[in-house]
Length: 68
Image: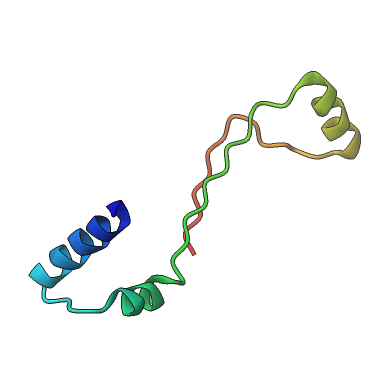
């Protein structure tokens, strides 16, 4: 029931902007949009030893945003 109300609200708001698409059409139009969030914790000492031995930078403490 909750999902039905959410879909109805979305379609109602879109119709107010003269976008009258079915739910299936909306999903097709938006299927290529993806949002991925990855959070990496600071490396533990045992992990840092491995990164150092491999000459890798584990990028701790940095946030990077890439929009494709």
